[in-house]
Length: 274
Image 1: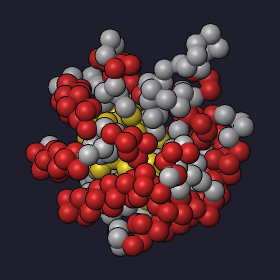
Image 2: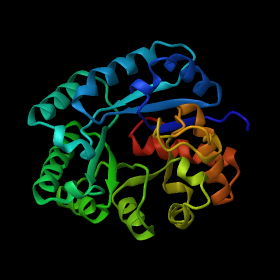
Image 3: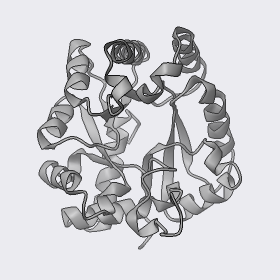
Image 4: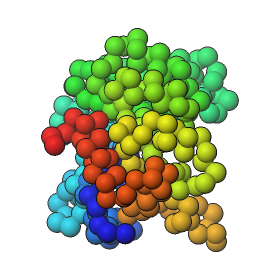
């Protein structure tokens, strides 16, 4: 595949999985056309590493430009404390952040559906929506088994800054509802799996103008990059062209043309200059 300008809108490139070879992988990503990537927050204890990784990547000459999106992920709700919101606000005040993420609601696990735990998720989500409004930032949404609740909260807060619905797992009508609120739909390596019929249906129904690319590395490895002898093949930003290729096939659009559209979509979603 020819080299195209690509933007990885969702990475956890700061986590320990990449400590041994992060620099090499950054060069590999740039070499295949990944010009920019976002480092996404999920826990307060990872904030320092998130910032350190961003500063490290941005002093490399042949690496993607790296952006910060700190946030408190709903899946780790048991570990979040009020003080962590104050630390998040401190980062937003002192670092150049492109968005707040990943934030939202997750009721995949039974314990996260319990009233007290779900309410805590909603409280932290609400607080981070308010921070996004305070700092005029888009948000990067994590939503599992809770699309209706997330939509209801965004409407209740009159959230108008948009962002990205990451690793979208909802249906067509839900995707349209997020688009109506100014969000782009994040597409991962799942699009390379012929069995991901729900996602394929969504991207074909809404069209390229509402989509962005992401690896969600080290997770969501494209099918072609998975190896059968490994329990979980580590995903990296260098695999983003395979996500583009899979999406181009499903939309029947030339990868070159699609890449240019997705780049513009991303800049729009993140309020970055064209």
